[in-house]
Amino acid sequence: MGNKAPRRVGDSRRENVDREACEEPEISAALVRHGYTADNLPTGTVVAVASLEECWEVSRCIRGDVVLEKDGGNAMREDPVSKKEQAFGWYDDGRYAGN
Image 1 (tube, rainbow, N blue to C red):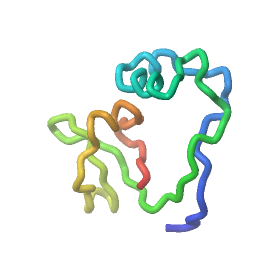
Image 2 (image 1 turned 45 degrees about the horizontal axis):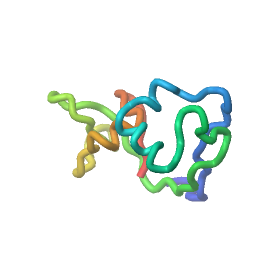
Image 3 (image 1 turned 180 degrees about the vertical axis):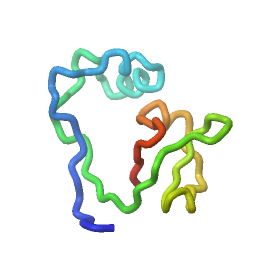
Image 4 (image 1 turned 120 degrees about the horizontal axis):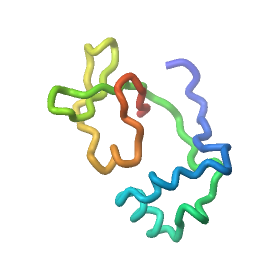
């Protein structure tokens, strides 16, 4: 799949901390475990380096569960996206998730 060089993942917008997201129970608990709050959360920094191996399109099944597909829906990822993973991601229809 194209260029497999590592990519930096982060947010360069220092002033745009999503305080509402920081108050979500799963996210708040993760921040607290590492000594962070919305007020001292480091922003404008690289938070990960990754190599994109696969790209999946996000959709929802009839029950509302997140489904990851590729090849126009001809292939589906077998392991479901957990509720905890959903709490940390943006899994709206038409978005993409990497692997």
